[in-house]
Amino acid sequence: MVGVIFLVMTIMPVQRMHFTSEDSRSRTMLITILFGLFGILGTYTGNAVFDSVANLRAMVVISGGLFGGPVVGIGAGLIAGVHRIVTDLAGFSAWPCGIATAVEGLAAGLLCMRLGDKALNWRIAAGLALVGESLHMGLVLLMSRPFPDAVALVKLIAPPMLLVNAFGAALFVEVINLFSRDRERRESLHAQIILDIANMAVSYLRLGLSLETAAATAEIIYSRVGVAAVAITDTRDVLAHVGAGDDHHLAGRAIRTNATREVIRTGESTFMHSSDAIGCNHPDCPMTSAIIVPLKKNDEIVGTLKFYGSRTRPLNATLYEVARGLANLFSTQVELEEIQIKEQMLAHAEIRRLHAQINPHFLFNSLNTITSFCRTNSERARELLMDLSLYMRRNLDLSRGFIPLGDELEQVRSYLAIEQARFGDRIAVEMEIEEGCEAWPIPPLVIQPLVENAIRHGVLGRKQGGSVRLSAGRENGHLKVTVADDGVGMDAETLDRVLSREYADSGTGGIGLHNCLSRLEHIYGSQYSPSVESAPGEGTSIVLRVPDRS
Image 1 (tube, helix red, strand yellow):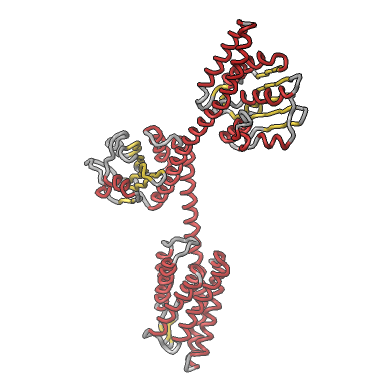
Image 2 (tube, one colour):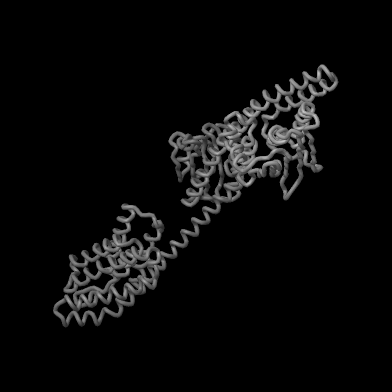
């Protein structure tokens, strides 16, 4: 009975430890002292026999060594063993008992170092206890005097000590494993909750912290975490409050609680267990506990995430870890929102750079063509001026993020009207657009520059000219656009050079295929990188795939 009580008393503080592979000096020292003290306690779990004590020390130091490694094993063994030698209960078997205890702890620790997590096995613990206690009995016979008393002692205590310590060590190790598995299960559940909430809230937080995005995010958290209320703030105001206390913690109003202001000031997470610590000035506030975690962007505090507890829904350490995990993910998402804004600004800057390349070149040649028609065909010159005006007007509106395919095609038609007026029969164009595709959203300036390249560097490279075919249609949920010509074409080396960033930035390559094609890959991902095929004398074909943004 005493042994059972001792086992329970030993397990209770041990199960509160963090059962992880992470190690530190302070943790190792704490575990060593804990197992050493309970090893001492194990000395007093039996009755005095022949001026000696039947005990459960082996169970404790073996479990400590298998759990904490050589330092814990030998440390706990020495603490318990030295105590056995120097106490009033020393008796004639004190030295064999003390030495055996230290050796058992060291052996368990060495097994832990060799086997790792596999050492925490009840079979290993039981076997080590049987071997260790057998060695213990052998040392008693070898070192204790008078020898007849040593023999009588071993005959009396060997069977119960072998069995009890082996059973106790096995049970102790299995209980440690049980708590370890339970902790892993709870941590896995916490991670799943955090990821589930993050996946649902990411589309809102991507737009930044506002009254609308905070309200949607708080609702998602409140519906999945068992707390009395969830709140999100910026550095001055409550952006959202869902749950208990929503009659006075109002969105759009100034922060009421002193604790929230303190977290914003210090940037440190806090867990408060009383209404006074929360510091709400409303007399009927139902909050009895609170977890407040800062939200950061580039190491700057931009707000807080708060869990509130009440008498019927108290908070705990698990919810504290959930709140911290969510705050870290939300902070990352807020930072990504700023990066996304910068990427959009860079994309617009790239479009403006394309305008700077396209407009002077095209405008100069177009005006020359129209000037020549003014003398010979004034009506035709008027039509071309209208096409040029339409083309330039659309160019001014291409800085927005996406445009319908139909707008880009009108841009292409305006461009072709001027080029065909300039070069006549040397340019033939065929356009085949599947019905219903005109509304498909695409980035601006990805088709017209390709048509221009097909004419300038493909068709016009031949004395007799050639044809350009532009087609667009649906394929496997995507918009497939093909720009093909039967011009001069390119060999593989020339194609690689034309597609290179250096060629695009040199200014000698005109608009540059790289500028147009790389934008699709940047916007949609590497799987949407356009394909380009070309061969000398056979022309060039470029195929684009654009996903449906809806």
